[in-house]
Length: 101
Image (cartoon, rainbow, N blue to C red; front, side):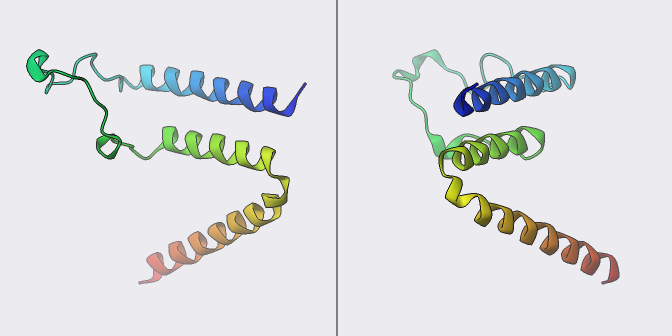
């Protein structure tokens, strides 16, 4: 199977799992927001006002995007691995510091 096909199947699988988790946790938003008004006229999307909450959905998005980049650019794999290891080390140090201060 092509690497891009595998990445696509992983992305679809993660999307399905995220949708199921959102349904189970009842976090599906209503079809019309409370601020909906038919007399506003032309529809537009302001990307600066799109809320991105943390949690599992953001983690899946980051993993999907990082996987796509690392499949397309194998030269970045070592740099990404070192960055992830550094992130784990910094997180552990911050957790230790928080417990002791």
